[in-house]
Length: 178
Image 1 (spheres, rainbow, N blue to C red):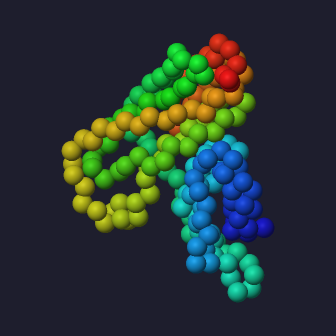
Image 2: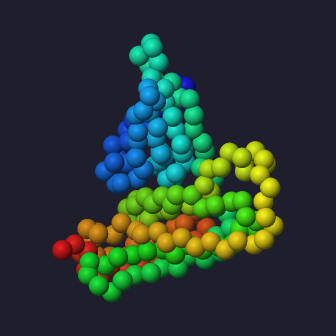
């Protein structure tokens, strides 16, 4: 089976999950299917900006995809947990870019057992990747707040891991549903 067929199979099966969990939107326009991202069982946000074209032979052809690249400049992850019920949990992810070109893209979260795995990728910018942009050499701070989908979870301790580099845990003292 070719890589294109494997990616297409993964993409179609994940589209339903993406809609169910509110991750990105898939759009069919002008004979092309545009998909925000596809997750693997191990990691979210591995494949981004995916485009399939429906051919005259009634087949889907993969015409574009990008591999998500994890932001490496994260230097702090802070847990924010509300005291109101139902509890809300956020991660404040911050760091410093060494120049003005990179940007934080989408933050994707996936709950596996009792662990939230977050992928924080760079915003896809083909001119930056090709070295075609002149970037300011000033340090640029960034900070993003990412909500964790904790509504409906059972009481217990949950872990989180951001880009496989930062981890922590939080506890829900009771079932988190009305």
